[in-house]
Length: 610
Figure 1 (cartoon, rainbow, N blue to C red):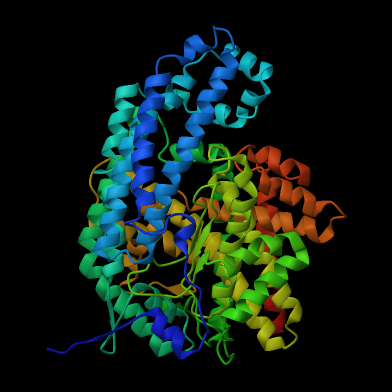
Figure 2 (figure 1 turned 30 degrees about the horizontal axis):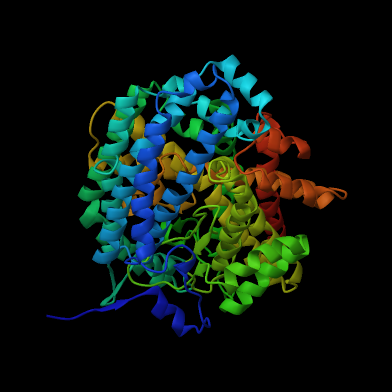
């Protein structure tokens, strides 16, 4: 039997000598999975959660009627917040360890055990927001006005109380909470571990997912085709599993939505994002209406660059022909991003520097490591950690800028505390996309060679299309899947068909969606982990396009307002955060402004053809 060589992205990276890539130092959370500190915090969190429940359950209504009621309620919230921090530290540490190698049984068991124990502890805290939401509106308003320390928590209290129409009685909430481990959480874990175990055969070598996807951006068209064929072959052999996961999670969500009283399939996500359904609908319709001016037009232009009428789907993200793609070593990537950040604000670069110096970034691609990239905020008492799969492409530099933007945002918001630092997803992409734009603009300004400038512009347009057009197409796909699932289980052919229809609409006639592409829905993790998350990317990109246009023409004061927006964390509605910049997401023109920025870059590329 032939023993095949399993090639990882790390091996591929070494071939191009990217330099020493950083790895996480998770000691700021815990010194090890078997450390005494982990056990101590697990025991303490359970004990203190039980004490919290015994002390406060069934008392909140009486508190506000008695002496010093506002101060006692403040005390209760502060205790609740402290427990959220320790529980968040535990689950963050376990999740980060798991992300480093989701195929490692030891890490998988640790992650599963910690999640179960954190759930067991947090069951004793579940009553608190439910009971808080049942308090009389006038009484709690009076208490917040009378006690400044309680007023500090106003944004969190008001956000929690928005959930009132959708909360169930305490026993049902406890049941939903406990069964999340064996329900949604278990299916999420199955997806992750299955995806990490997949191997893709290319000329006798077996690659993991990340380097295989990376080959779709190789300058060699034959490699792109073979990568696509390998993806199709492996995806097809696992579609029954991915279909089962998708059907089960869609039904799970439908049950939860029905019990809670959410009308639309995406309403629970809108509620979590603190954004109105009509705002998201306006974004979606604006982007879909712009498909012909954006993706359709760009891919037709790209096909002409390749001397073709249409491009095969594996050529969609190919580098431009006859233009060598620059490889960025890690040091150059670091300096590029920090320089762009510093040009905007030295403070921004100063916040970002520890990520490189203190082991807050894990960059190399390794077997079993989670694909893609993210910035995990952990808890305000610690700091964020950034995960990358760095291969030295220009897109990887932009990904570094993007995730580092998240990290800066999370650091700035941390003083708001565990309850109010988290930012709704619609605004969580603001700093990341802004950081990308700063980096792109600096690279563009330094690029004088016309061919290199064309390649850089094209790469940015493709990234923006992937962020706006592709993510809205993902959202449309999810809506159709979840809506159809309400009528019964979907076959693999049903899901494949919906995927191909939605992609054809968004990509346009210049992309040939050949045999096998119908299976490419199966590897998108957002569909599994965070249903309807994807529109947040488009929201953030369009918002930043408008924001950046203001920055380029603004007088002094923009930087201060920008930092104030990031420092707010989750304490303000999007309308409050955008008002200082004269922006309003409810205005239909708002989305048009952002889309015109993308169209303008395509105009510039078309002008180069003349």
